[in-house]
Image (cartoon, rainbow, N blue to C red; front, side):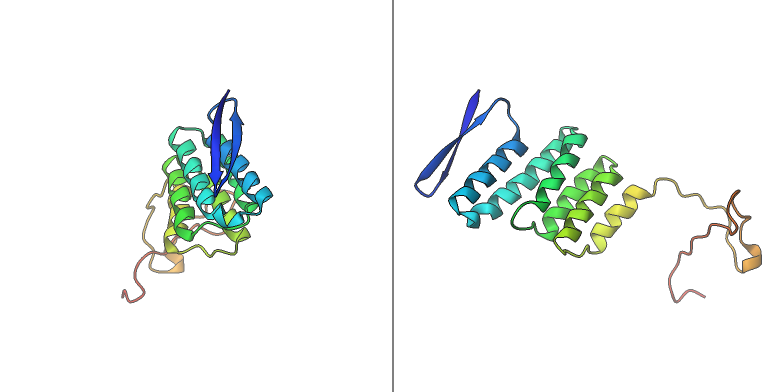
Length: 163
């Protein structure tokens, strides 16, 4: 087993590792810093942890990345909106709506409001197939209702000053 050495100030701790696991190492380092009462260093560790989650996604380890998101709720401080959006972009890249939504849940936990870009990421992952059926100028010209629904499905697109 290899070991990593965590040095903060003049104290050092050995962190054992049976395999290379960035998420696990980040958690161990967080516990060491908390035990020492040195939580002021957690901002750096939190950013490293976010980078590890992105790395997991880039390696195709979607399940491990999604599982790792829960840890963000247990840390003593939140990431910035920009860091959350970086993670969301990676989940969006692999078309994981669940992953994107789980990032939004972590943001909600920390009371961070999603901006337009974050919401656009959700929409881009959620919507896979859009078909133009017909244009309608009145209620009478709407398409026929889809089987099982009482009203037709409609989408309104355009600018507010059109027409």
